[in-house]
Length: 298
Image 1 (cartoon, helix red, strand yellow):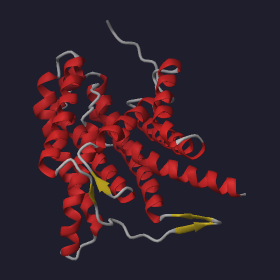
Image 2 (cartoon, rainbow, N blue to C red):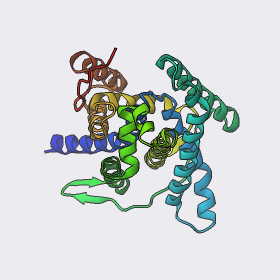
Image 3 (cartoon, helix red, strand yellow):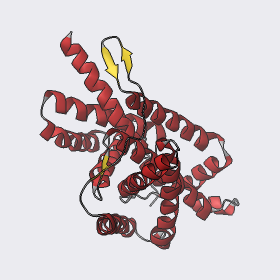
């Protein structure tokens, strides 16, 4: 029985971490689905959102406001950062080879890391408590309130995002630009606005992930987004990059695999297992679990 309880606890922990990976992976998926760009600076948007949380929470508490309101500030700032980055760094390279945009994304990532290291010190800094939620008892297992909030929030966001892309006018415009941006422009769709909205939504999701991550691991440093963003990218590839439900599925699989490895094998091998999963997926099904093979015109 004790082993079963331990297994369930690790499963819940894996889903919790996987929910954060899923939120970040959704941002990767949206941007790649529209402009076919792997935005490696996306992980550093999480870091920016974490620093916004670090600065905002004490101010909100001083003003008598709930600390969780920092999520609104982080979403706005990260969305603006995403749109600005796209306009300044990526838009001029839209018709260039993909390798140029990829190198630029890495450059943006390094710029953000070093800028924040200079501005705030490279040392980790503690963040005050964001959510004060009671634990929930499920039989003999106690689940933290923030764990349930993280899981539910990620699933709800994924469902809302799916509905947005499938049902709204802007969502249909995104799908049209994804299929053929030139034809979409001829049909009267503003491609620049559509891409900007895509980056804004993806960056806002990174902000939500940052706040939830800080609620679980209450410290921030300038390099925290690198590995987190990389694992989220693996989750997106695993689920099928460009597929919204696939990002959620990939995040859960990576989170559970990491948690189980730490519990039953070795915490030092957790990252190796995650990257091993990526290698296996690329060898067996490069398009991911829910991805489809699409022919490319030459």
